[in-house]
Amino acid sequence: MFKYFISLFLVLSFFDGHAQSKPIDLQPKDTADYRQPYGLRVGVDLSRPVLSFFDEDYTGLELVGDYRLNQKLYLGVELGTEEKTQQEDLFNFTTSGSYLKLGIDFNTYENWYGMNNSIYIGGRYAYSTFTQTLNNFQFFDSNRYFSPDDFVQGATDPVEFDGLNASWLEFIFGVKAELFANIYLGASVRLGFLITEKEADNFPNLWIPGFNKVTDGSNFGVGYNYSISYFIPLYKKAKKPKDPEVESDN
Image 1: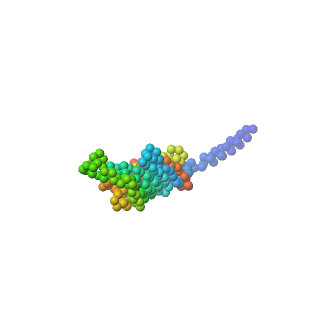
Image 2: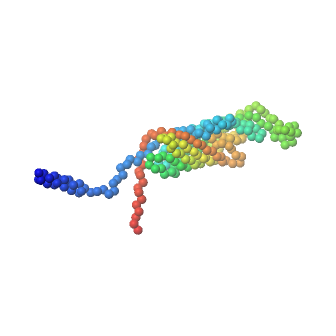
Image 3: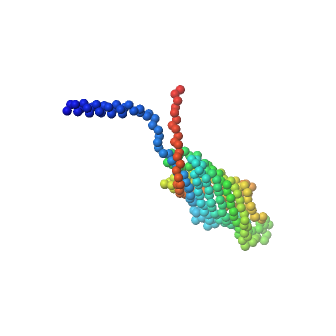
């Protein structure tokens, strides 16, 4: 019996020595598959339906979307339609039309692995086609002899000016955060600079769909949107993880 114990001890000693003879890798390679989803994100601006519900003089809808080009760059697009009636001191008018915005967004936020949130800056080229209707107007009379309580009423039949258009550039600052799986909530502020416009001979463009109010003597306009969108993943692309910083001894 004793010789069997001696044989078993010799076998175990052999395997233990063979295992210890293998080199130990003190710097194992990271074999994790760092793959980021790429695809199309589509949604709708929430502010315009809400404003349409509370303001009877406004109707609007804007569809939003972006497509991921690489780790930081996105192709962005907005397509919308708006109609707004506005009362000024001496006249009432309605503007109705549609617009398209196309450009690039750059994500400045460094996500953890598996996250796709963004804090971005971007730019758009925008183009709008629209119609303006002068609903009614009054004549300005400083004397007020014939109409002491109000200005003299002018034409009340609507006059339509069609074939109008405008183009502008937008600078954008915005955020997008993933609320649930593939569902994102976003918000952005937009500063527009009007570069071209076609207006009627005897009635200026006072409000442009997608650009908002046109200020006399200025080409700048301000806009915003609050969007909810859904991400459609199309494929995944590997992302190389950053190497840890190695501190050198001085």
